[in-house]
Each structure stands twice: as structure tokens, then as C-alpha cells.
Image 1 (cartoon, one colour):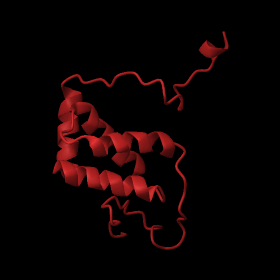
Image 2: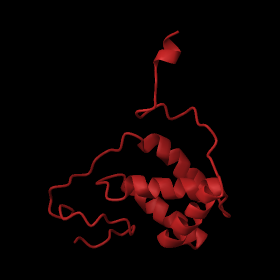
Image 3: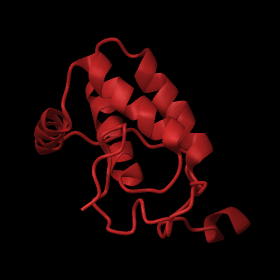
Length: 120
């Protein structure tokens, strides 16, 4: 098992560090950069901030690239005084309380994206 990266987001993937994984560009990097910058500016995180941080940590865990985002997400946790485990506990409680994120019009990607409504 590979040791964690400097950001603490190591995947444990045996291919890590073997030269097989090259730095890649994530297709959502630009959108996620905006979110991470917002998280860095949040001195006291609201529920939405915590959920976004957990979501992005999961997205980039083990991803062979986007080191800037991975490092900044680790910095966010340090600034908020949270471990990944504490963040996961808090976000599970947030979701259990009925939290639902506000609709976002900016991420029209994924299997739920339907262009037929726009064609009419």
C-alpha cells in the first residue's frame, strides 16, 4: 500500500508511485477551483461548506493530478481544525438532518444531464 501523499489524500492504490500513474487533468477542475477558493475563504464553515469539502475530498481521493486542489482541500481541513474523520461525521449528521444542497445551474454534466429540454 502506498503511503499517503503530502496532502493526506493517498488512495492506497498499488499503482501509485510505480510510475504507472501520470498526472492527469480532471474535467471538473475549473468548476472545483471556484468551490475550493470559496472554502478557503470560509473562516467558520456552514453546512454547505462542509458538504462541498467532503464531496471534493471524495472526488479527488486517489486522483493522479489536480495536486493544487488536493493540497488546498487539506489546507481547508487544517484551517477549520477538522480531520477527515470529523468532517465525515459532521456531514453524515448534516445529511441525516434533511439537508439538501441548493440547485446549481453550473454543473450540467453527468448521467442526469438532459439536453432535450434545451432543444425545445
